[in-house]
Length: 386
Image (cartoon, rainbow, N blue to C red; front, side, top):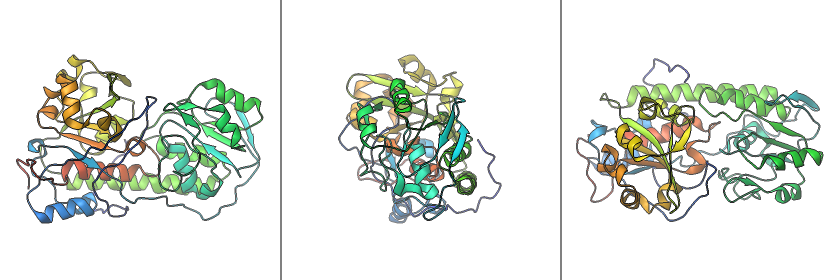
């Protein structure tokens, strides 16, 4: 985690947000369907308005978040792409060694395919100012500017060689998170330059990921500008969260992944990126307490021992279990936790929640709003609310 600033009066650099429902994916397991909504009640109409339309720094927060009952949804709202340059001219050719030590020469960036598990690299290309050169997308790239581009992944996050070749890319930027790897080798054999960037996603690694992508597209100066802007926004947002969140015992949080009706349940622990999000919003990562590293299938014993006050989930994953009630019915162990007993689940669009990149500060801001200033809904409880 980058150190947070001491200032508590910083305001977020993002557009005004609302809380609502969203969708889509960032893990190599397929996605799902219907809509889940439902948030709990704060104390007043004024509180509702602040939580619904303002940034976290402007929102009316709960006095005692651990007493709050009910789910909420974190929404990035209309936080779109913000290019650091308009129609920049890449400095080409570029010869570089990628993260795997492969020497790659890039001579043409007119048809870029940036794909990875999290949708990070495509968003970076857009924020560098080369969105018009992007010819396709992965399933995790769902922001408005790219969502109409052809998709080259199938069955979740499986690369489709025919779909890729049909787009005739002049450059592929990817990492080792997608497969089968033979497809990447096939692209190289076909003469397409492939740059493999670091697959680790976290707050700390985000600026370097931006620089790697920028080097590959011949825009190192724009990359440095975007990396600096992103880093500063993350630090400012974390400082704002630290200064504005309730002065109460930190919530014990756990990132929980569920998908479909086949009983796919994972806990995301240290090194998954989810730990960074939890730390960034001022929570206690209980996966670390129980020694849970990476992404591993959940056991009943693990989640009961973790005793989370709050679960972070992907929207589609929660929907795939029939919402909060369906999840608790299908997994009684979760119902035994403080989070389950109070229905304290915060979901966020699959394409946003782990999309470490230029939008990371916005993700933290939206999560903090959903956690500490959730939108009310009729019939819900808000014990201890402000």
